[in-house]
Image (tube, rainbow, N blue to C red):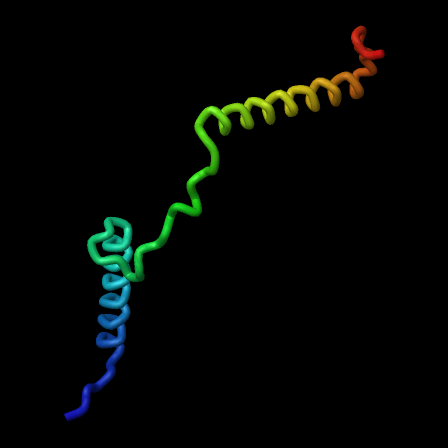
Length: 84
């Protein structure tokens, strides 16, 4: 006997396929049964010490503040007293 594909059988196959994908996804998230080889996540770790990274961030903040104040001054025709 051959397996007959009716619309209800196709629906059941689609539902089972979706359930399978959900279970595999949950397993991958929880690392119970990952769907692939474990990844090397060290490439996502930032380089440098904590102090170096914090220093870089504060330098970026200072640059952003400088840019914003210069843009504000230029938009409102404000001249700085300290500019030579």
